[in-house]
Image 1 (spheres, rainbow, N blue to C red):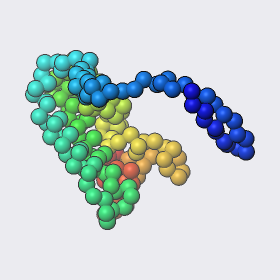
Image 2: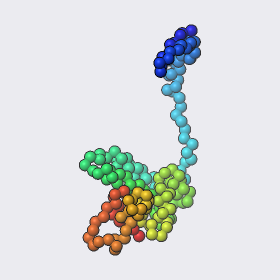
Image 3: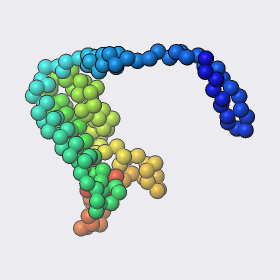
Image 4: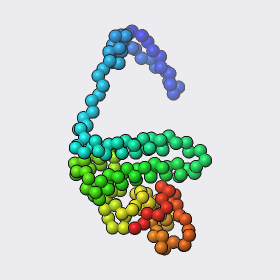
Amino acid sequence: MIDIIVTGSGRSFSKRKREGCLPEFSHTHTQSLTNMPKVKRSRKPPPDGWELIEPTLDELDQKMREAETDPHEGKRKVESLWPIFRIHHQKTRYIFDLFYKRKAISRELYDYCIREGYADKNLIAKWKKQGYENLCCLRCIQTRDTNFGTNCICRVPKTKLEVGRIIECTHCGCRGCSG
């Protein structure tokens, strides 16, 4: 037995600790931990038609990685996120168009893309509503993000703006997505 004296907050007391309470790890035990098999994911294989859209989605994923690692020196704080929002929009619009406009993919593949995070289901739900067909991002319609509780400036139709006025959304860099 080993006596350990613990002091703290002005009091001191002793604890008794038995030797050999904790098992000692041998070199062979730690070596066997490094040779453990890899964890298998329980992800189902992609449905039919995945091989047709996979190259485009991989290309957009690569663009997203480049946008995330892009240096942000010389940009405003909000400008550094704009390329990420644009690529997210582009990827979601690609899957939306394939399923709803061109009818080129099955419902099963569409659901797989939504479930695996290749497309934003909330943004697609807005695109299906009248007046939101060209919505750039969900932040532009959230009224809590603005001073006066209104939508973003990019949601104002160009006919209602001054002639020649160039607008740019502070959230995602959109130049006008009203219907």
